[in-house]
Image (cartoon, rainbow, N blue to C red; front, side):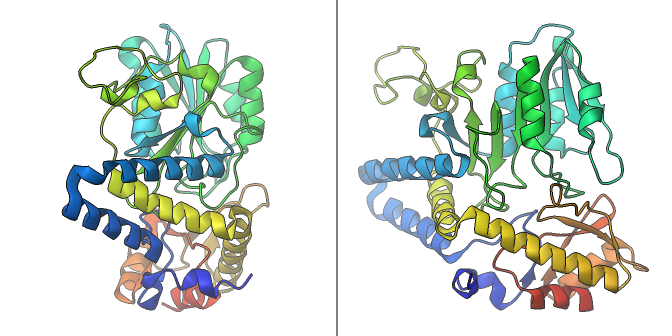
Length: 371
């Protein structure tokens, strides 16, 4: 593909070598325009045009469903990844003595909500990594007949390790275990089809690889689980007649829409939708190939300069996140020098973390390594 047209949608590229999409991504031009259009419409019209923006929410929901291979009614909007995790953690039909198996290197958002269940008699079993990898056998060994939930990130935030969601989901399905995925570090780069990959619940804010603003993300609950989860955050828009404010009728929507209890972040959702449309127009499979080509190049050039590549780079495990160690400089000094030179990378787990998107170039990676 010719990536120049895609790159032209990113104003950040004019002044930064931005290689930090695993943190907070810069907005592309269509998302900025969508947010400005919403703000202008609200300023000029107030509530009188709310129907237009609700139609836009439906359009964005269909885009999100296309991204996941899901029915739009199984997709709901979340203000952050934590909310989607808490929908399951707080709503699950726990019994005292149940346990949750979780990778020990998970981002805190995918640990604290489960740990917060100790008062309900739920045990959290944290499975350590083996270097840069999480062994499926270690996760399976931690499970027993009282394991109710397995939760992992699709891609681990610090190491960049990509979990085998198909294999883990198959184990969970065969053993009656709810499989939850924090997908924030892969959605937008790696294709996903929940009709093929047996995921029961998923959550991802849109501000990383999906190129949206903070505060607008995607949640998914497999339909067969909707009635088994006690609804959390129920409000006016959780029910089957959400606009009949004068009638109190607590009949919940028979799908994931019941988890959207209150007013949505319309500005954020419409901007996220513009970014989703951009990504889908390019093709997620094409984006995956581009990102992996860039990270392969980064690893080759870093190794040639004496860096240590911590991340697993086997084909089934590599991702858009590369975790690195400089031969002489501490990671905080690398990040400091890079920011001064308008190169955006980050530090996680006392290592340098670089995370290029598809609009980045090998020249920008060379610039990072020179700095």
